[in-house]
Length: 114
Length: 111
Image 1 (spheres, rainbow over the protein chains, first blue to last red):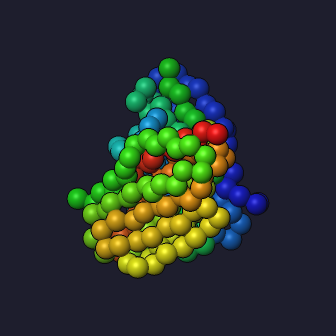
Image 2 (cartoon, each protein chain N blue to C red; image 1 turned 90 degrees about the vertical axis):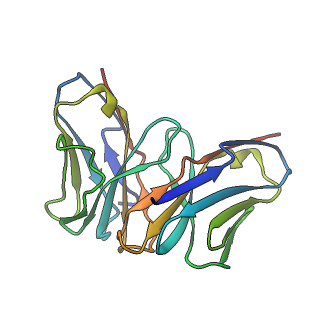
Image 3 (spheres, one colour; image 1 turned 90 degrees about the horizontal axis):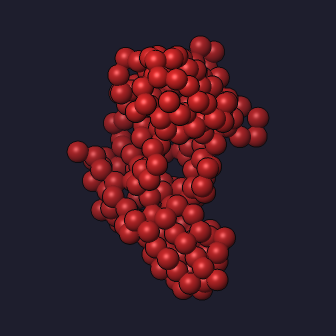
């Protein structure tokens, strides 16, 4: 596609529920990133994929968060037992290589846990 | 601790009034310094990458510069459409693609 696509654009869920957020990167981009952005803050790193493997998952806050990229393209961020503190905008980005090449961001998924 | 700090938090300029945004970083082994623009409800939009001290890049009314400790985004004769939040981010040599973001500077340009 022309850009990074994220679905859904908005998600409201009840505390304790499971959610999945999807990211379609730019075609051909091997690197994919997930970030989380709270109001008034800069994006906070969650996880980085190079191909199908998670090269760096040190930003995942706890074991309720998990992400996959089984075929090296689309990625899904999964959050179990959601908490109100998980409410934020979840951003996905992709780039053509590793460090030093610019990352292009999607519009984000706004997650609200009520 | 790796850190990126942006100042000011907010800046209001009259149209045509030039100014600069600051990004200071304490990131070991800097691999690249990135500037993004973010409009409300949108994802960050890539503007520039700077790789080494002394490097400068320009795009329309924006010019980004880099020293060993900080980067500046200079805005010359801004227009209302330049109003946005400007984010600075740094990439380290040892952590591959991870970007360390600052909190951003919210720029408002009024006519």
